[in-house]
Length: 244
Image 1 (tube, rainbow, N blue to C red):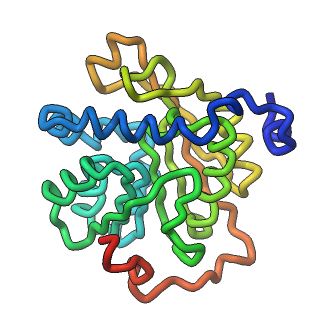
Image 2 (cartoon, one colour):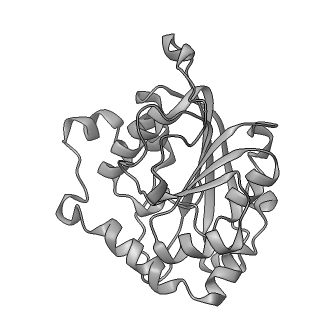
């Protein structure tokens, strides 16, 4: 099934459950956000998680958007490496835990979600956008919308890195089958060029026992006439104080 079928509306496998699935996922994460869950999530090593794409990260002083930031584990790691990080997390319990755990001044938090990222204005521009263990929670229609939206916040020459889950999900947090090929087509239609595709085992023992693996995809935004897009004087100037 190709990207054109999704665009035309000819292929809508999850039409009957449109609208509610993401809310169910968010409620599932809110219920799961116990002290033990937060400690286990935050205790994973970003170096191990991003092992297959880490060489594609900017070296210093980049603007990073971590979409689905959870407890801020990865956001804190990026901040420690000198980047200005926007941690986007829609689950209150995880966002509050992240704020408490990671207090670096170059991390800002935003309550927002895919597919629309409605709180992030069109003028926002990031050198690196990451989606770690997020894509499987979106339906195919929402993935199409999300990919188009993500492309608008990536700076020319910037990189989008995402992990696609292969295998079952945790109880209470619905997942949908993900096609790497279709994801690549969606990205291409949004002006994103594939630069890395890598299969990887899960770093979590529980996932390994369930037969879960991951496909890592990295895309570069094609440089066009928008290469001169204006950068804001402050990377987070557009975020209202109530969101921080």
